[in-house]
Length: 102
Image (cartoon, rainbow, N blue to C red; front, side, top):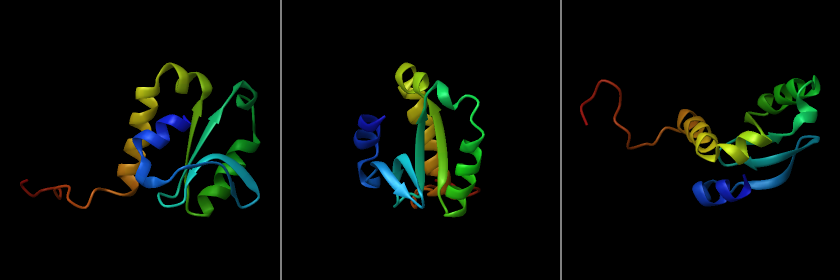
């Protein structure tokens, strides 16, 4: 994940193991207000992850969670989800406006 974020999104300055409030998140871009968590099997039945996400979202961050096996087995899919989330939050200023011709 670290390599993907650094290579695919260098302008967003992702950092790893970042303190946000009283949590340490796996990866964060303060510029994009995006947090990415990569979870192992111990999170499958976690009830605290949802509470943690609510606190982080209240700080203005979007939180994306991926399973370890997704990151390792489908990096292109993970990239697509991250890129779509970034585009949703920060549409490119030169994108055509809906209804206008490009």
